[in-house]
Image (cartoon, rainbow, N blue to C red; front, top):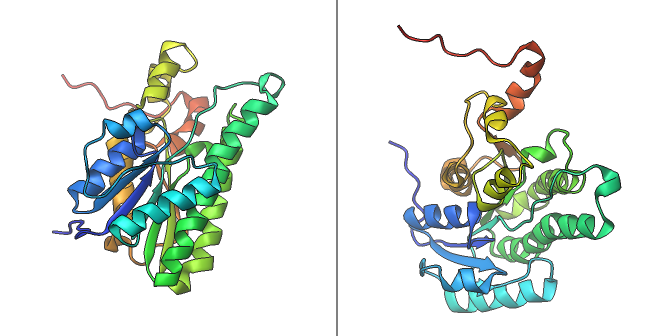
Length: 263
């Protein structure tokens, strides 16, 4: 049976104090990694139990802060073997005329620039050592159109960035991949349901599997891409979306077929 073992490797997870990042940190730790959580939320970090490595407060939009956090982590715990870039912010669905420049800048800066800076700071160190694995959290919003005119382009940028860095560092032993989650039940999504920005039943109906993801579903895919089981995989973006991308175009035909009712 194939299993994932990280055998004490050091994994750093940005945005690791909540949502997909937190689920990923837990899964990597369960598979034997020493996990460091890097997050801007100091209170959430303080409430997170030790996962084998020191946790650090860090703003992913600040290159100097990233450099300081990575230096402190590697001094205390050794070189980073795995980097998961899960830090990001969502954007409410808005038409362009209602999307402010400030909101656009915040969304793109946090998601795209933040991912790039973390990749650049950590990936260059990995390349110098000759090994490492990076997994970026993109989104299905980067693979199809939608009313997310800042978030979608930012996530599409992460997909392109992933491909470029995979080619850049591949011969130096660093793999770079991404996951593209569908609608995942995190606190921001539950808030979107509460304020009626999104409808839970509609989202379920839009997927081939009739489901909304849990953070652990995405974390499992990240663990696979981080592991030696994916040693010959680089530069890919893996949709983890309950079949949202393949089922969406069926709406014009009345939706995907349902299993016949049993008697």
